[in-house]
Image (cartoon, rainbow, N blue to C red; front, side):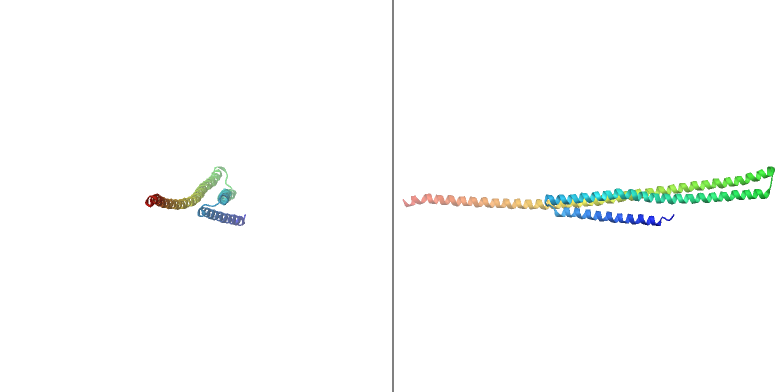
Length: 236
């Protein structure tokens, strides 16, 4: 059976899914960067952006849930079918070999036309040869089955390793985004703190200046009042 068309279709589907996942991750990265760099915005604007980020995360999660089991199952089924086909060919080859030996034994016995003990011994020798061939065939089939199981084990370990690596990559990507968000938040808060301190210092300086001006005005007023109080005495 020709499975090239089905394999090509699965490969194309996997490529399209991978491209779609990459696009979603890029959109998620852009949304998170814009959310970080915009800083303080209106409550409605911030809520809309957070909703888009949650929606993109959910789409990526759903795509991973749909793709990974399907892709892993398709790969495992393809490997299993190939191994099963190889063992079937090996068994059919052994069956043909044994059938040929049985037919050869029957021809030789008919040609010899030996009876009695000698004929029985000749039959047993040929039968023993066929039994040895059958045992050897079973041994090879068992050995091939063991090799196939080892291949499937390695394939499964490879799939688990790839899944673990992909999960770690996703985790590292999100951790980098969170670290970047933390650094930018700290930088923004540090800048706000510096501005607040500078404003406080400026206001304190203005307050001191105003207090000095008020004291100066009070002194001036006191001096003026004292001067006015002394003026009638000088006239008298």
